[in-house]
Amino acid sequence: MAAPEIKAWIIIADWNNSIAKHSDFRGRHERVRWWLSTQRKLSCDPPESFSEYDSKKDCCREKLSEALIESNVQDKVDRDKARFSKELHTPLLLREIDPNEVQKKMPVISRTL
Image (cartoon, rainbow, N blue to C red; front, side, top):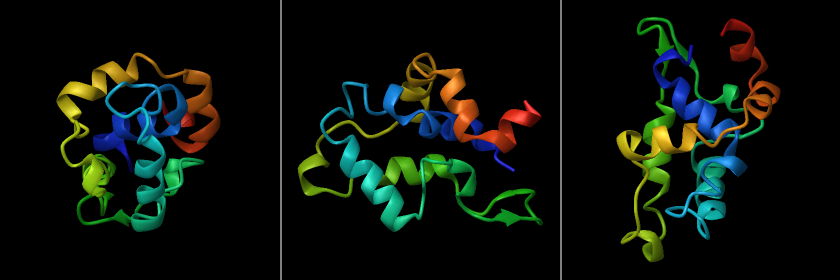
């Protein structure tokens, strides 16, 4: 179900080694996580529960990467700071993840990889 968004799901699954540590998000990652959990009903433990399956599109109804981008500009204080960029941040954040942590938090997807 997450195939097109798998990189965003992996980044979210190991939040503490990815978003929380990156200099563009450090100091505000808690607000980003809070917004994702309250406005998008996203749990980082496990992120697999995000959205619902759309059988017509054969994917999730909502894109996790779009929610992550949107979450970065909710606070007036943060609007002038770097937004999450799939092109810029994804490769950097994926290098920092702990595969064991991802496997613990994403058991369904881990079994299929």
